[in-house]
Length: 61
Image 1 (spheres, helix red, strand yellow):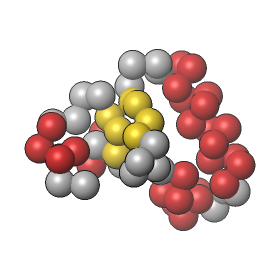
Image 2 (cartoon, one colour; image 1 turned 180 degrees about the horizontal axis):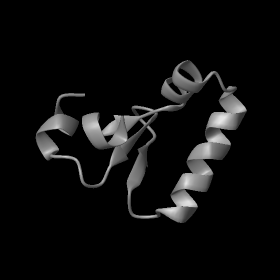
Image 3 (cartoon, one colour; image 1 turned 90 degrees about the vertical axis):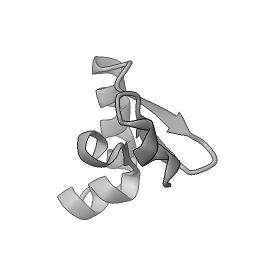
Image 4 (cartoon, one colour; image 1 turned 120 degrees about the vertical axis):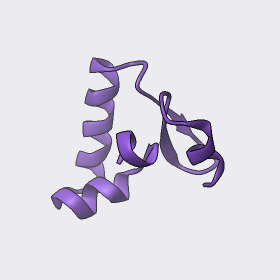
């Protein structure tokens, strides 16, 4: 999701992998520690945005 669409949120992980909201948050935290420059969190939209996604994709959200 992050690489293809430029964004991802906990609901995506919950739906795709059947994990709880808490587990999805842990997974994002773990990913962010391993790849600190890969994504940023948008508090207003409540999604993680790719730092490498084309700006046009992000603007359409």
